[in-house]
Image 1: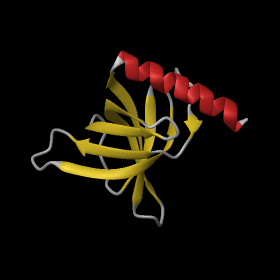
Image 2: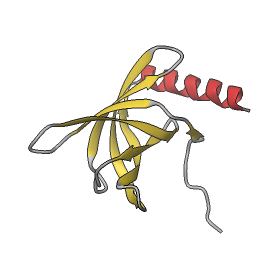
Image 3: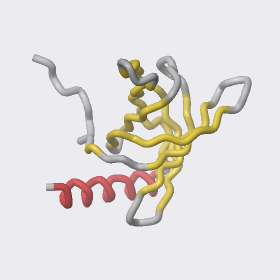
Image 4: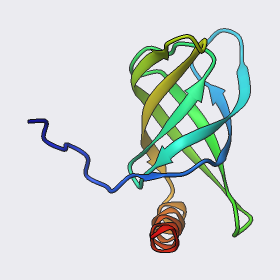
Length: 116
């Protein structure tokens, strides 16, 4: 039996994300959507494999409240979606402003209530 290791409740949600891959010779900017999000991290669908500990700067557009929060995150895992040429990537937030963290917490709580 697998034991849940997450500290924060994750909710399924599709939000637009702009991201920049850091620590690369050539700047990489792109957009995608998330599949789910929590106070501690996010799952993104990306066109490229990024190994664990790859750092990304994320700009997360919170729909409905017209707020964009900025967060530094690092890849924890990445796997190829069979037959899709895309990768699901689990990232944990490593630098999220306290104010933005509070906004994200409230946003997730409200979305969780409205989805039930």
